[in-house]
Amino acid sequence: MPVQFEKRKFMDSFLRGDIWTKLSFVIFGMGYFVRGQYIKGILLQLIQILFFVFTFGFSLNYIAKLSTLGTVQREEVFDPKTLTKVVNDYDNSLLILLCGIIGILFIAAYIILAISNVKANYFLQQLKESNKHINSFREDVRELFNHKFHKTLLTLPGLGIILVNVIPIIFLICIAFTNYDGEHQPPTYLFTWVGLSNFKTLFTTTSTVSFGYVFVRVLIWTLVWALFSTATTFFGGIVLAKFINDRRTKFPKFWRTCFVITIAIPQFVTLLLVGKMFGDYGIVNGICNRLGITEFLQNIGLVGKGLSYIPFLSKPGWAFVSVILINIWVGVPFQMIQATGILMNIPGDQLESARIDGASERQIFWKITMPYIFFITGPSLISSFIANINNFNVIYLLTSDYVTTNMNYANSNAKEVDLLITWLFTLTNDYSNYKMASVIGICVFIICAGITLFTFSKMVAGAKEEAYQ
Image 1 (tube, rainbow, N blue to C red):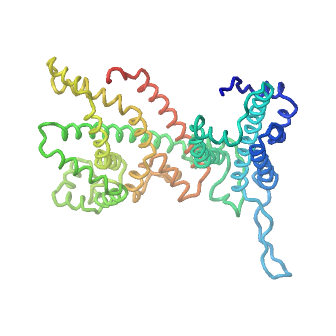
Image 2 (image 1 turned 135 degrees about the horizontal axis):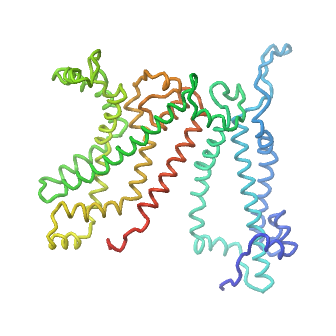
Image 3 (image 1 turned 120 degrees about the vertical axis):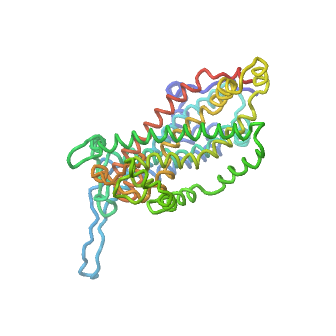
């Protein structure tokens, strides 16, 4: 039968509840045992016991050391009795930080569960006092697959998000406030908290520190790259799909198949091959030399006189243009497939009405087709822009042999063609500068989140669903 009571807020439930409801905040299973829900009481009591075992037997030791991230450094001491080296009982800053974060999250989850438990017990108390039916454990399980099935489905993905996203993000943020780098590498060495000094370093430019100089330029190039790579592939895919689906185009299935096949080839294989083709001594430069293109570009000043090749991927200006053009080649087929599906679903009555009213094909394209495509692909376009900000593959694979001659970039372990994401990768993978990589990672997150919220609100707000029914 339908229940007439609602779960109240925690303080209201705690103050109005009987002794068993109040005790359920301390002993999770108590209220359930008293009200005959033994299986649920046993399960919650086991959860509470496991929490205490985990916290007091494992994580509390790490939480206690979070303020210092450890004080005992690893040492090897020679033991004259055994004639061997003995390692002392040392602290590992990395484990302290990671396990401390996990321990705090478990405590937070425990508090949330305790509050929810009091509210649930007060709800059961109300049912019992009013002689209402209290579900058995079997009925509760049945509800998890009926009325509460949405909660059952979301539980596993929710736990996955916490493990794969939330914990690493919190860990990344914490690393940005430490001095964790190659000189403070656990377990041999400890690292500690340094406050906001890493953020200050990121915006500082001196004779010895050039992060401020590099960050501004890498950020500008990242945004320029994301804008051009998104726009060129977006409009290129639409134009290509429009041509292929035009009634006057012959063999449209053949052309569509040709572009679809290119998607079947793994992108990294294509990028590695193209990178070699456009290398300083690749096949493209060989052809340009034979045709006299290299000499012509030298004469007009686009290629240095001392070079015997066109620096497609080895000089800043050339590399900027080259990676954008190559990305068009790689990215347009994907956008073409998406645009083809959209073009095939444009309301035919609108197109026919426009033709009857005397609209030209160009007017139909700009007044009906493009607004419809923007309406459908608005969120996808935003995600494509954010994905291009973090487009690691194209930049890294095409410019892996790039060597900077700018000392400011070299001092910060960056290159002119780096995006924020590739710079972050270089700092971690090649130079173990985890602290600055974490700071850059936070900046990337803030930039992506800000752009997403702003553009999504502008593009999706006031959507014209009625116009395309």
